[in-house]
Length: 506
Image (cartoon, rainbow, N blue to C red; front, side, top):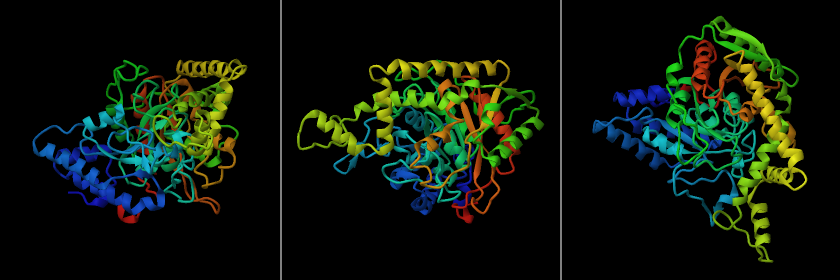
């Protein structure tokens, strides 16, 4: 039997296998992570909703199934936290926004998202709802209307966003895995800033049914874990065709976890010069290049490549994504669900304006207005249509590169985590935090962020995580995990634990 302290350091696979073998109960595993959340979340703010008794009962049900001799599934008893923009039938879903609250109550979805259904079928214990930038719009999890989330590596710094709560829950050992959503980097960037593994699948690999939409042509749900194998196992469970989502692809998921640990000899890794230029923190570059040198020692072949339209990715993304957000968020009008503000005039237009003005935060209002502008008469061709054409060029850059290499390697974030509040008054500086993750999202190809190293501490900055991003052709998640796990096995910092996690948990 493992102690609670040791259980919290187990990976997804070890937890599932230990429960299946009867070495530990699912209830004990759930209790260990719940205790960790109680100890740490007042300081970190990763969770928006966590029902202890509900989680423990889910663990007991797994134990009862095992006692009856029933198969537990690949995630039997594994706690998985859920980003609070993903619907759960028995738990409130707020999108970290006031607009989904009415009469002191948060909206309670009448159904599970497809990914949550698949987690439950695989035996996972749904482990609360995690904080995010409101409606997934942000890069720091400071735009939550409820509270900010703090990085466990330095609690005065951001964890990245928008899936910062999920990343912190995993990094601080409050959950062994979590789901996030990635529209322009919202899984990969917080994974890099918190020393966790995060995967953005190919667009269409995972169902979006039950994900509250931000930008429908970009949104994808994916996993966080503390190791590549764990993230791969969760991805295998949630991936696949879904009749409720017509954008899911009828492509066989195949064995993704099984690719971990396989040889990478001869794998060609493209190094795009556009990702190693101005704006890249020297410590980030040094550590990413060191990781690439290790992969070369493992037998990979490093090949220079070019992605010339990368420089247009931020402008393209903030036209396409805001236009789609403007359309998607029109449903939050105070009529069907959520908050409603009735001004003195009492007419419908005034109610819409008052409800949205009070219910949406500053960043959400900014993006809705930008999106409405680029879709307006006289501007559609100049902005939205042109952005879609540039998006095609970015996709072609990746197609051309993948004609020469198997995967592409870049930094995940141009800098380590910055201080809370440092960029809140400068939206452009915040948007630049996603400069390396946006192109893969626009191209619809899969990408993973895996811990690369920790920076050297200085007088002005503590030791902070750096992430390595790997990008593959469409539906190449197994290849991503194969290369990522090869680096992970050589990474001397792979077992590092954040200072916010008490020594007894290491």
